[in-house]
Image (cartoon, rainbow, N blue to C red):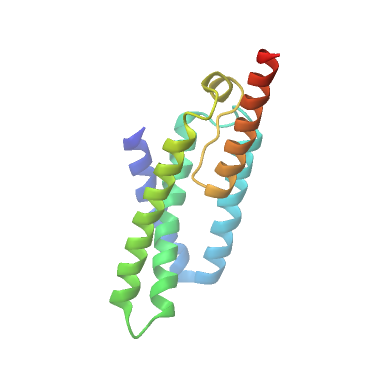
Length: 149
């Protein structure tokens, strides 16, 4: 799956480069709409995407998002492109670290049987992830209260 994610990432980088060279603002808008739609569908439609499809879409969108963000940040600071580039990499790494931390902290909260059987969330959106974690924590707490009664 990691190899598939990386291969799809190369495709995403290539497609984003072509789109950015034509119209950067339109590329940003299309990317945000597409990625948001995909995340929404992945969280609301259980079993809609298989794991290889999810890895492919995530790979394309992740690398495209990094390229779009890099282009936007360096264009906003033309007098200091090195600073903008280094800040982009630093905040990208901080985002990966924060996402990994949140996923690791939320894993014990989620009910694994519920997680695997009914819903398979895919994506890396912290806002949606927090909603899912709160929903599952509330469900687990209500189940524990019912079993205790």
